[in-house]
Amino acid sequence: MAEPLPSSAYVRLRRLWDQHCHDTFPAGPEDDPQFQEIALYASWLGGLAEAALARGGRLAKEHWQMLEVRRAEGNAAVWTLAGGLGGHARAYVARLMALEEALAGLPPER
Image: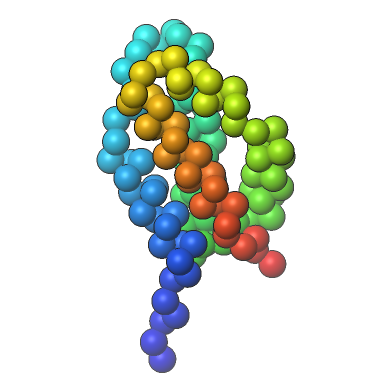
């Protein structure tokens, strides 16, 4: 029996994650709180993305709940930070937001 094809949500998440992994973090001082905030957001999303990809495109229930809380809070703060840090930071954060959106499109584990 042939294996089922991955969902379009899984394929999108995989593509975005691969792009993210091959990009460099925006250059800036390590002790700058703006860069630290972006790094924390990237780290948090990365954990969710790796776990979802390992589960074949499904989010663990606790990850789904964390994502819902984060999405309710919004991304205005991190987007504002990126806006002041230049083009590469804006592109980096925009892709992180696309990753978050892709994660939100995945079904939770049952």
